[in-house]
Amino acid sequence: MYHSNEEREEWYKRLLSKDRWEWQNPYKILKNAGLSSGMTFFDVACGPGFFTLEGAKIVGKRGWVYGLDTDEQALNICESRLKREGFSNFKLFNMKIEEFENVVKDVDFALIANALHDFENPILALRNVWLSLKKEGLLLVVDWVKRDTPIGPPLDVRMNLNEEKALLESARFSVNKTGEAGPYHYFILAKKV
Image (cartoon, rainbow, N blue to C red; front, top):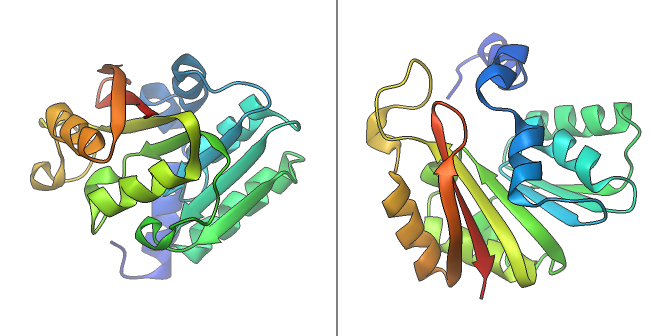
């Protein structure tokens, strides 16, 4: 994805930019999907914590936050951001979701934002998220629409809403709701069954 430290730093800045809030408000997306105070929240492929910090604000000090990413530097940024806001009720994991089987089992609400299309094995990734959720726990998938947009990954790596719904259903999720999550994204809210 990046070839130098400068490119990596620029990527993190873009992921956390105020401009991104214009077209993808993480607080609003999470609240509207049902994340609430006291819940256990799991941000899969959390990067530097664009959604993670807002999830922590919603679940509050009575809740718990897990974050997972393969990029250690991004996790360090996420940790710093959480600590700077006064949170200590979190644990971050530097690993692939495909290797996350049975690491945690108490999650109320999981999120995969802008990443399902990137996983090496999406079915295994979803299975491991399924295992981490409590009975009837929720999974929110937010991903890029499969059409030309001024930003985002190439079209050939994006999946459309129906493709991702089929993946979720094959991983034993029940799709509750779908819709738009800003001008460039759709969302799928699913429940563990």
